[in-house]
Image (cartoon, rainbow, N blue to C red; front, side):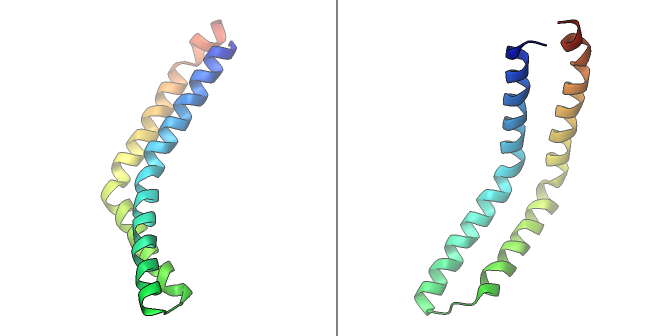
Length: 90
């Protein structure tokens, strides 16, 4: 295994990580902005007011996109395992 192959594996892992984590981050960011605006408008600073909607949003993301996320991770794992013989041969 040379340095270019290691960089390709690392780059692929980061891309898969971003693809899987992206929906979570976008939903939690959007909910956080909306709740933050509501809190600043009403001047109600309750910590649980931000936690519960983010938790519900994350659960919805898992329910809707969990199958795709798992399939993406499994596909990358299969691809990585299939490339092991080529990596060992150099």
